[in-house]
Image 1 (cartoon, helix red, strand yellow):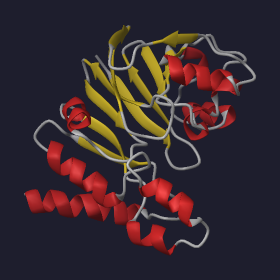
Image 2 (cartoon, rainbow, N blue to C red):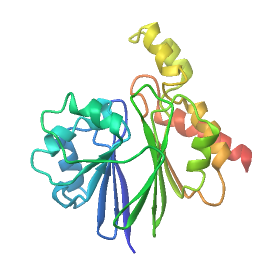
Image 3 (cartoon, helix red, strand yellow):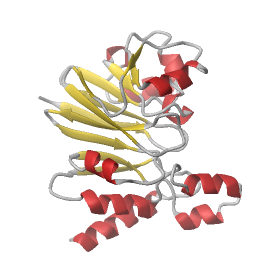
Image 4 (cartoon, one colour):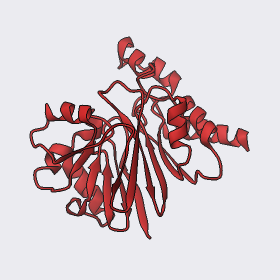
Length: 240
């Protein structure tokens, strides 16, 4: 069975990925505008009209802002847990067809088995995803302030992993745009992962199973792609 995976956008301004396996076509988060999602899907020869569904990790706008626009004309259901739905319902002009899952449960979407698990972040009930397919296991782990044994265990079997590497600690500390209270939120246990935090997680799960690692949700002001890559590369090099 053939498959396609691409990150349509990832960062503080918006997060959205696309996974296609067989006839199943999923968005994981919809944090770009509806127009941008349509344009970026078109750039890989796909359309929003063919979507099977949209999986939402949590309600923050950089993961959900495109839903209202998309749901004006799409029939694809939106999959999230109950608390995320309640938070989304209060601000979406156009209400999607919600399909509610229980946090920690597993369900099937045609050719994809969807496993979700709780993560520590300052949202109502944020989750990570492990999507199991005939093409491999795809993990999605962004927006968490720290990792714990449960998160590591749930993501350990990923063949492909999209992992948050949000900030470089020095750049965050030196940033003059963010007040101290916001910096404290970012580095808190319910905030975001730094480059070194991401490297710590990779060190715990690296092995023969992990084939592709995407570092995502990089801060535009407080990180650089080369810094995130260097932190993880050096840790992998140390492991051999």
